[in-house]
Image 1 (cartoon, rainbow, N blue to C red):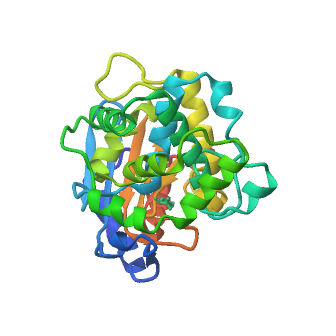
Image 2: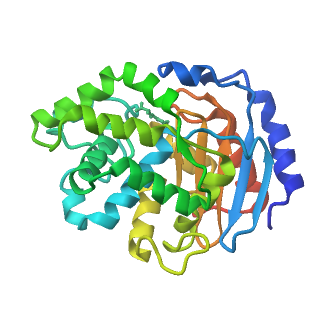
Length: 306
Ligand code: DON
């Protein structure tokens, strides 16, 4: 069944009581200021039809959802082995910003969606692009069909001021020879990608290519191949929700990517892309009410990749 605006509104009403039971990310002080009661959802069909409810047009910090965009861009610039010799494809089972495995596994991050992996991908982008921030913005605006998308400079600066852990991760990888550029400029770019300010509608449109074999919304040419699209969705399904990936697969059953801004995107291959936003997080750093909304939606419309 196709979701209607009424169904989306009903789902938001059902999950609203969860607000107050999670915790807004506060290790990035600018994120702690976002009102916890924001709640939005948008669905983008592969033909471009959008169904939305709640705060679906309000911009928020996409944070780690950007890791899927960085990897997409890297896939367009590098041969597969150039990427996968530097970052793995396995779930980590640890927090998104953990350093434990990195030391034990010779500076090779488990996957491109934990912070360490995304920093390696940012390093790859830095090596091959003269203006990676500009290129990322150009890509996102095109995918979302929205020329107004911007980096939130306040969020990026706030994260830079509290960058000790990410800087440590990058320096540790550099000590193992798995980081080619100077750490600080790469970190600056990484924080900017995380600070992209987008709405649920922007996100659902942007990631439509993952539901459509690599073909972006309204485009004639694929951005990644059908095989790369399958690979991205497989990695999202196994690693996109960090140490909560198993729980998310069990409850929602779709490839997905979360961010500590409270956004989650979820893909129904061949059909639609969904984006939700609710700033309070569960202990793994995934949106609490957002996950619940996706679980209800998956159940009501009878969709899952499993
Ligand atoms: O680097 C960080 O810690 C943040 N910019 C992104 C973390 C994040 O979104 C994890 N997601 N659930």
